[in-house]
Image 1 (cartoon, rainbow, N blue to C red):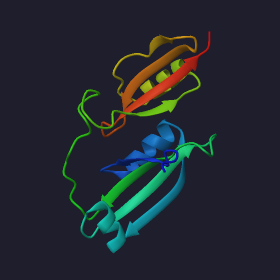
Image 2 (tube, helix red, strand yellow; image 1 turned 30 degrees about the horizontal axis):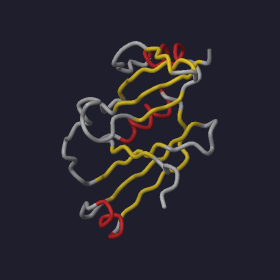
Image 3 (tube, rainbow, N blue to C red; image 1 turned 30 degrees about the vertical axis):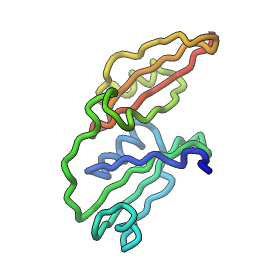
Length: 152
């Protein structure tokens, strides 16, 4: 009935700023860029007269990985809403990404002014090793989780 996760979508108020962050700062690659409008999309998203730009990004090394979709609705006033206030808010908590080197990633993102909740933390997981993990925010406040599994 249900298959693998196809993509994760994030509505953004500024598409150019979002692409710059996800592509130039995080290192994802744009794999598709569409503008969609018409009755079908308006009915689907329940936004009358919707004109939506949809940009898909994915890790350049992983052709089968789950993409991130950035959505921007032009000619519509956003509700000015903010992302969830924290991880205890019901609903989607974060979008998680694997990283190859947590310390290098943390330093690189810090140099770009990325806001982190804390420094990377290490958590021992049963026999699978230690998980290095940290939360940060994208430019619009969406929580991102960065993870590295360290075998022992």
